[in-house]
Length: 66
Image (cartoon, rainbow, N blue to C red):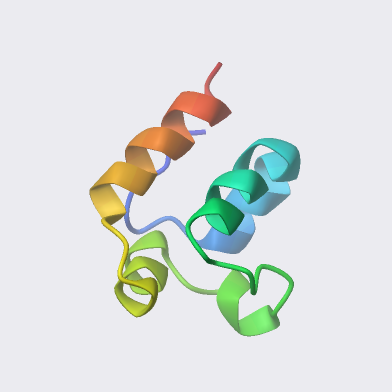
C-alpha cells in the first residue's frame, strides 16, 4: 500500500492496524475508532491536529512497506 495525503485513514487501518495505529496515536490522533475519523484523509486529520501531513505520510509508508 502506498499512502498519500489523500489516503483515507480507515483504509490504512484496515490494511495494517498494528503498524499504523501507533503512529496516529503518537501524534495525538486518539479518535481512531470514531466513524468520522475513519473517513478522513491524512491531510484532513493532520490539519485538525496541527501535524505535518508530508512527514506523517513518509512515516506511514516506511512502516507499511517494510
